[in-house]
Image (cartoon, rainbow, N blue to C red; front, side, top):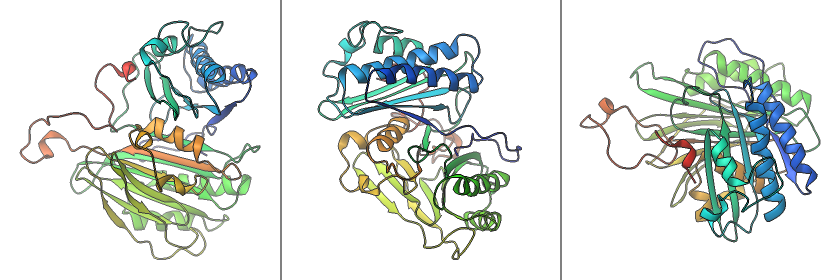
Length: 381
């Protein structure tokens, strides 16, 4: 299961459900997407009319796929880093030829709960869209309560999906944003867990590993992996991937089993890292840490074997330039193996505080693609 990120040392709360995927292969799926978004918004604690607004967002995105696109899906889940709802839509074409016209009310859809993509952009707290003629369109609409604090650190997105036709999920993920004990600089540690097999026993293994991760996420990665190994001894075991992002332009990777990591930049996939052979909880080898460079503008991706790793072989320029929420939606839609649980996580690189950079002072230039914009979050189209 995907577990809501919590500060280090906080008691584990009830795990939320995994992300819901609605395949838009007939128009009745539009109503299912709306009902699913409304329920997840209620479960997320959004007040007042916000659950109905979440339903409108999902309905408009699903309707747009049903009327104009091919082989599309809508994903709905609780926001990963703060209270709210995230609705993702991905399709396989034909793309939107005139983006400005598409935001005109009624241009993309009629007879729906709203007025098309224009309504989605107005209602959403944060809105991001990328389209490529001939390839398709990927959209993220996030809805948070008024006055909700912004997420800390660079943007992070993840999708955790059970095997098709099953409810329980043997995959899971978590994130911890803290400070390095030695330097007091920020660091982000993420984990993806894939319990062996699928179904309830695999879900038990994944949940056990995530509880162990949350108890002390700041341990050195080999010690953290060893802690997870001990906690999993009474389960069927799991594959585990750990990544720790540092503000010095590097990340540390430690993985056992079939959880893969990649550093992705505009120019391609720069690093491809696989786990050591073994099973955490059973026959784990001595954990090994690999340090990889993370140049400015890079994203780090971590995924279970429910996502086909061949996406790294010849990725399109369109895929490489997607921000975290759109990248995970695209990978989950186009490269998911439906006969297995699947989790994919993407995070932007850390940026050191001004006084920790060479020369101090403020940094000039464009913000990192993986970092949230400080203003106009709704207008990222």
